[in-house]
Amino acid sequence: MPNRSRRPVAPAKRMASFRERMRAAGLRPLQIWVPDTRAPGFAETCRKQARAIAASDPGGDEIMRFIEGVYEWPDE
Image 1: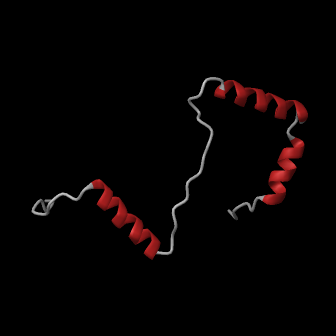
Image 2 (image 1 turned 60 degrees about the horizontal axis):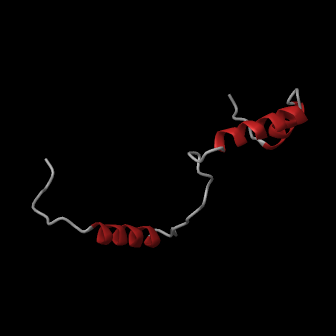
Image 3 (image 1 turned 120 degrees about the horizontal axis):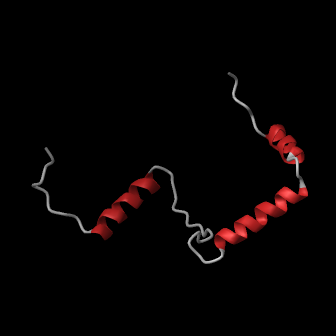
């Protein structure tokens, strides 16, 4: 059963404590910007790019050779 005798900690303090622990563990925060997949036109842009890739190498041979050359396949 959880211990409910402690007072609740404000979210800002809880986050500050978390960040301190992460920094003490040798980590640092990192913010990245990524495409908004909900944006109008995003899916169509993806389809357009996929079609361009497929048209440039219809059999996918060049891409597969590249993948096989750089990926370390696990031993089975």
